[in-house]
Image (cartoon, rainbow, N blue to C red; front, top):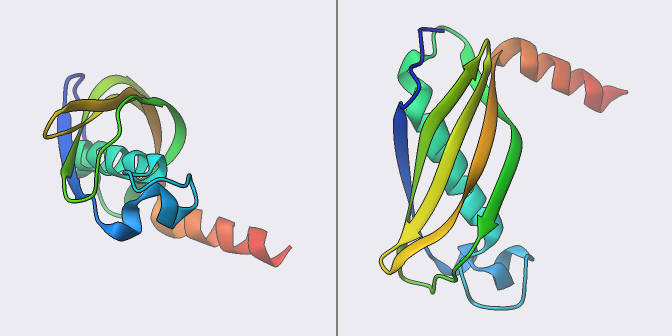
Length: 131
C-alpha cells in the first residue's frame, strides 16, 4: 500500500431507482431511498478515495459504520457520497462520510475499512463456510 494522506477524498453516485427503495430492499415500507443503499454508496466513495494507493492483490473491507440517515430521497434523484480519510493506523483507514441529493445532505457519519490481500481473505472466508 502506498502512503495515504489525511484529507484524501473520493466520491460515488447512485441513482434512486425502484430496486433501491426501502420497500424493495426490506428496510422499510416507504418508496424512499433505502438506508442500506446509502450505506453502499458511502462505502463506494471510501473505496474510490484510496483505490490509487492499493497495490497488487490489496483491497479493503468495511469493518465499521456509524452513520445517520437524516433526510428522505425520492425515486428519480441521484445521491452523491463523499468520503474523506481522517485517520490512517497501519492498515486501518477511517473516513468521514456524507451523502447528499439535489436538495442537500441526507446522511453522514464515520466509516472504517481495513486493507487486506484479496486472495488470502477470500480463501479464509471460503474455509469458514465449509466448517
